Amino acid sequence: MSPWILAARPRTLGAALIPVIAGCALAISVSAFDPLGSALILACAVLIQIATNFFNDALDHAKGADTAGRLGPTRVTSAGLLPARRVMTGAFLTLTLAALLALPLVLRGGGIILLIGLLSLLFAYAYTGGPFPLAYLGLGEIFVTLFFGLIAVGGTFYLNTLTFSAAAILAGLQIGLHSSVLLAVNNLRDLETDRAANKRTLAARFGLTFARRENAALVIAPFILGLAWLPLGYLWAFLLPLITLPLAWWLARACLAATPDRKVNQLLAQAAALHAAFGLLLALAFLLP
Image (cartoon, rainbow, N blue to C red; front, side):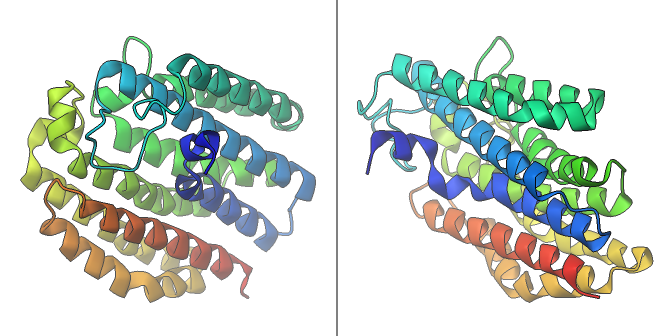
């Protein structure tokens, strides 16, 4: 596999794709879907996710959080497959392309979309880099829930309809919480190495028991929030995601017994499957009468 594909982390791109798909489906449900605009949103979301991964790869290595003995998947900088300078250059070029593709979206959506776009570009770097890197301050889960949930779904819906919606906020929160499971599982696995590198994730700050319970709570919370679809009149949005509840229950129980080792990578795959299945079923629910 090409080092650049490895650095882009294709398995993580569902975190960018799923909320946009859900936002588009919600827009279709109110007969306000813009195919070209939605394609641009999808492209920008994926490019920003890839750039974030590039920055994370190079900067985590520079800060000592990624070493040759890491428990997770191979990182190209720490493995010596690409020099950090090239990976950083690739990240900035990817962000530049995302910014260019976003120009028509800013013209359509106005100031609020400009603000969202600028913050997205900024935090792609500031997640790992800068004087206050979010991932090193224990703010990663909040960042992911906000940008890969609430903003992604809500922004997609807004650009299609030019209106706000309680349904978009609820869907964004559900999808964002499941997206944050991907990060929280990583943090549980890397608890010891993160502490050694002074990467103060929530798991590193509060310990293994907290990390286990945090993961389980993040897995189950979207199902509890799903009850809010009933007063909003979206019966299918409550019912269809329940298909994934057995997988979620298994994953929550597994997280409660997890230890910081390579076996946690299996839980990461299950978390990605849950995030994708839940989000796609929720999107399908918006298309049903």
